[in-house]
View 1 (cartoon, one colour):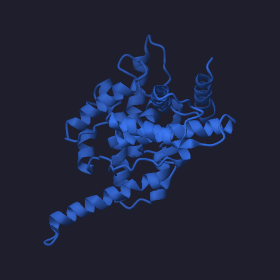
View 2 (spheres, one colour):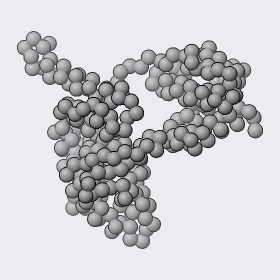
View 3 (cartoon, one colour):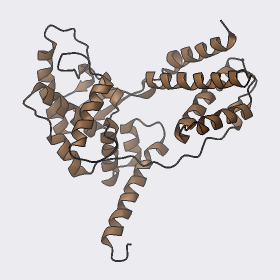
View 4 (tube, helix red, strand yellow):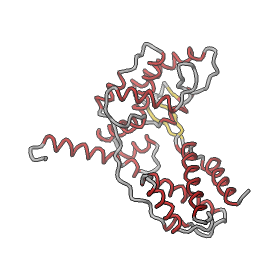
Length: 298
């Protein structure tokens, strides 16, 4: 096995075994390292001999091919993690990415729904049908907890405490947290969980809370599709993914005066700086209201 292929394999074993990085990140890093190794082959370089100038040229070539700055920044993050791993293992004397600056990113505020629009989304599912009960529980839980799509799909009945009105989720890096949910989310969950066993007749129980109408485990594509359909019926937002409900959850909490540290813990953010984007959303909204309402606002 060539040395460089061995280095990459060991890196991914480290990410999955020790770091417990999500499959989504693993797939992205595989693409990043594939692009990087192809670039190195084209210019006659090797992973362990490439310096910061080579890495800058690699990122430049990606941008010239039309890659966004955000994607280029992720590729650099991948290379930083990779080279730090190689140095810890004694395969490199230094980390060449240390002298490479992250591309300056444009600030992108999260898209969210106003409170009345969320109410319209939550009112849509036909709760007299199994599918409608499930959809209502999914939408209510997304908005009531702010959990991620991956966290919702991994939920098991044992993770739901109906008495305490809390749910235990496993987030990034396999870190677990407890999130409370509201009364309406609890009602929708209770109705769905009562219906859920009926969908399992004659099928193998996948063990997850949410199932397809055929009793199978739901897929990310399936949940994205149903959330997009409900949001699209009441809003013209370009983004209609479950993350819109997560952003709405956080934005509404901050707008109503919630402590930012508490919001960080609810969302499962590692850094408070990540959560602070929602204060910018609130400020931008206030500026918009001011410009519309104040006589001298425009």
